[in-house]
Image 1 (cartoon, helix red, strand yellow):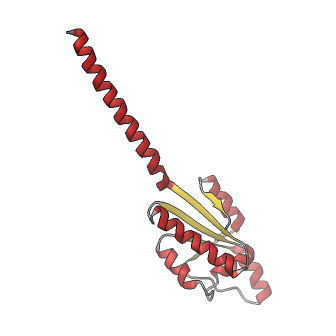
Image 2 (image 1 turned 90 degrees about the horizontal axis):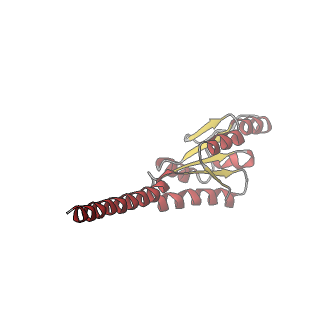
Amino acid sequence: MLKKYGKVMLSVLMSGLLLVGVTTAHAAEQSLADTKVILQISDPNPFKQTLVLNVANNLIKHYGQDQVDIEIVAFGPGLRLLFADNANKGRVSSLAGSGVKFSACANTSRNMGKKLGYPPKLHGKAVTVGAGVVRIIELKNKGYMLIKP
């Protein structure tokens, strides 16, 4: 009787371990939902600016809007992507509506303002941060991956 009871308990235990294994594998699969990405744009080239927006869009399509955090950090000549009159302003608005965050470097904005004679008008969805490079470091320290398309 004890042998029979032991076999039943072993069977129940093995089934439980199998269930835990499946649950753990599923949890590991869901960890992709915690994907955090920084897209750096520091290039004035319109092709690169379009590329960074395409990458953001592709990440949203792949992971789903609620499964990926994306922040585009613009500094140096790349800040032009976040100018209010940039040709991609509609795409910036659309991506912001999908949860993409846009950070604009205050240092670059101030220096461009000196050269232009007036502060550049930034897209309404752009949030000014002290320094673009510092923002990237902060995000990397929070587990974000840096991608430079």
